[in-house]
Image (cartoon, rainbow, N blue to C red):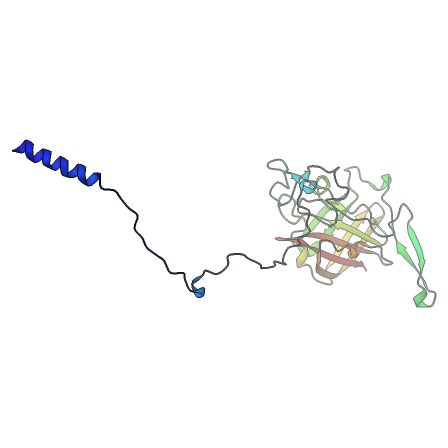
Length: 266
């Protein structure tokens, strides 16, 4: 009996398995227009960043060594391919890398201590643009050009020629194309890290004294302006008829701007 039952069950299972399967027929109504999802394309125009910035290897940077004064700064390093595009890294004053890529000043000087020009709009009056070139006899034995003092922020720093990372790692740096004494003397410095000489520069107020000492003597200046300027704005580095000192440093977390402090001789 058990054998018969087993055989009958097996036969029924075989019959079921041999039954042909067929697909079910069904239809789906098309959705109404309002049931379609919204487009996923984004046509928003973002204007907060310059779309014409060169991001190719022309401007790629080799990162600085671990633990160096500029190793923590965004955008620091040396050019990977500096020979590909002349001036690819130029166009700003003080970069985050701690160097100053300084566009040439219109009518830059080459050695003369003063340049005369006539202003026809002022009834033929003549003014003199002050300028003093850096010469070998102006260097101190330590390789620096002078000492900058700003009592209001407790600053006393030596100033070296040039504004590259090497100069700024030792102190403040003098803009090579600007005057060292007469006229407009321009100096840049770091505001954080190992060298944070200009960290409180933006806190100065009009009237604060600034002292500049070189082998040519000592001058005292008075702060007349503290302002935030665009990185590409070089108007503050132009030659002047009065004796003044112009100081630059980065603006924290705002790479497109620089702090510019100007003080005139008193």
